[in-house]
Image 1: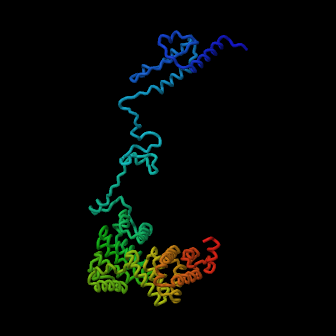
Image 2: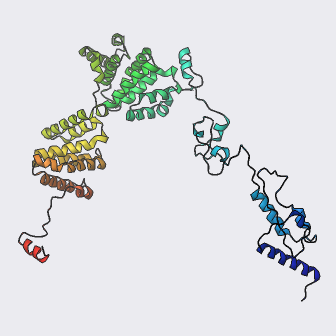
Image 3: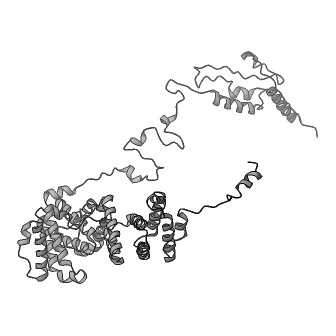
Length: 471
């Protein structure tokens, strides 16, 4: 079908445009731009000046291109190219902009901020996992106001009032945790969060009663806590009233703690040594009761025997974590020696529990096995394996501690063999005995040093082996 005149003209103009794009560019003068024919080449003036402004564009205007080619709108592609060329070629530079990053490196996606911004107090990062939008609105300042109330002698009305019924929920758990870490500051800070001015004496009696239910290590820790409470929160009159409350409740205490009078007398003597109580407390008119009299007499006897009250500071004994490693090792060796002499398993277990060092039981296993190897007789093997069996069955010594103790002795077998030549044989006997009793598994057996020597080539076959291999 033949093309119409209009379509023919448009097709020719497109072909001319494509031909112009394929041919090399020839510079022309400005006056020649108006006299171009459709077959002639349109030239875009590409002159640039470094100081040109946005109003003086170095390119030919879009309107002149639209009217070119006999006023027909056939240069839309060139118009688009001119606009894109103007966008990428016209880059404004000034003295203040030398191509440096935006916001000194703090701008853009994936940027953590300007260097050093983490040191600023008022810097907040919304992408921080600990970011809190409320902190950005207002700065929270923690101010301690308790000292002001302590100086004025008035109770702080903003604190929660502590009553006797809250002791089990608010105090007991803190004291039990204190028996594990021994941090008196943490207990005192917790008590400062409550208003207990009306029940100070009851609080002291409650603390001592908790300690009476535990071992001597906990009693030692409680005596230290009472000393620090005297320095921080309480006075001597509060302790006097607290001990009096305890002695009034002897009938209830002795039901669960039969030796409560003697233990409270020891607490009183220790409190006098720590200057929590004065010696005049022993001469006060107490209740005319047999148990109270027994407690006061016990405290008076301890104070009179120890001329220097400093000796009373160790009245509960230095147990477990309060001992140096060397002293603790010596006590373990004494325990093992006494058990070897007496053969009393229950007494040995009780003494080990009194040390209160479950994290150091691997030392007991190591020392017991070393003692066994040094003795080197069947009686020692039977005693030690029986004791270890009872300790493992009662879970007094955990399997991890047992394994560490055996591993330590395995590592030193070569050195022990210098003094005990049959140490390997004895260790095999001990392992077999323990495995038969059922308190060690195959993984400990596999860790034992292997004494077997495999003879691949006998002495008689040695020469033939060498001849066959050409040696």
